[in-house]
Length: 237
Ligand code: FPP
Picture (tube, rainbow, N blue to C red):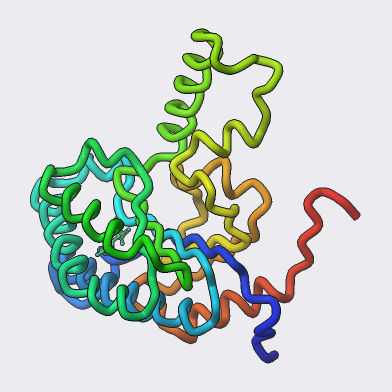
C-alpha cells in the first residue's frame, strides 16, 4: 500500500519507549539508549516535516520519571540541554516551532530558560510544531485545569453554566493545539501511562514492538499507513 499524502495525520503523538531495553540488549548504559533515542527523534521530526505533519507531540519526561535514579534524571536533562543547543539552528532554519507542555516550574532553572529561549526564537514558525512533554502528566494537567476553572467560577469571572468541553481544552497545556489523530507507542507496552488523557479520546492507537531508538523513518511511514487503513467513526456508524 502506498502512503496517501492527502491523508497524513495533522497531529501525531508519540510515547518514545524502550530506550533502556535497547541499550541493555547491547550491553550499554541506559543513557546510551536515551542518546540513541534523541537521534531517532531528530529523524522523526525531519520526516514529519517532509510529510506535512503539523504537530508532533513527544513524551520526553513524565511526572512519574522523577522516580528514576538521580543519575538517569540528570543524564536525561543534560541530553535535552545538548539537544536544544545543537538542534535549535536546524529547527529554526527548517521552519519548526518548539513548544513545551507540562509543569515546567518543576524543571531546573537553566533548562527552563533554555526552553523559553528556544520557544521565543522559533515562535514565528508554523510548518511543524514540536511539542515536547516535560514533567508532563495527564492527570496533573486535568487537575490544574479543574482548579483554575473552579477558581474562575468562584470569583465570578465565569458562569458554571458556560463551562463546556472547549473551556477544558482552553485550560490544558495543549491549548490551541488540535487533538492527535494518531498515537504511537514503541517497545511493546500497551498502556497510555498518563499521556494526553483528555486529548486522545478519539485517536487511533498504534503499538509496535520496535524499541524507540530503532523507530526510524520507515517505521513512522508504516504507522501512518496503518492509520490510513482504519475507519475513524467517532462513535457514529
Ligand atoms: C522511555 O524509555 C523513554 C524516556 C523515559 C525518555 C525519552 C527520552 C528520549 C527519547 C531522549 C531524550 C529526548 C530529548 C527531547 C532529547 P525507557 O527508559 O522507559 O526504556 P525502557 O522501558 O526500555 O527502560
